Amino acid sequence: MAKTVYDLWFEREYSDREDTELHIGVYETEDDAKTAIDRLKHKPGFCDFPEGLSIYERQLGMTSWQNGFITKFEARFASDYRPIAFDLPAFEELLAPDEPPANDQ
Image (cartoon, rainbow, N blue to C red; front, side, top):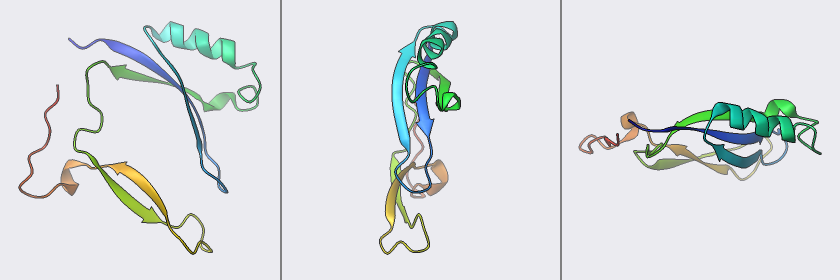
């Protein structure tokens, strides 16, 4: 049985610049992650955007992007002359027809 851990991130989306994604830490219990949020939510930056602190339950030993990734290009604004690249998980429906899906459990 895989062990569950709690991954704490700060995430903030912007319309005019790159989004912020700060990996805060990995905690053994959800309560430990919540305690970390309690410590951080009064600190500069975090106090202005406490909703950006998120806990994600993860399984140790589980590969998240099992099928690789694809790069998608798109403009962020209609006036953009050069598209920006985004890396996205390659889901099974995007794989070549003869490529078997990963079984990583």
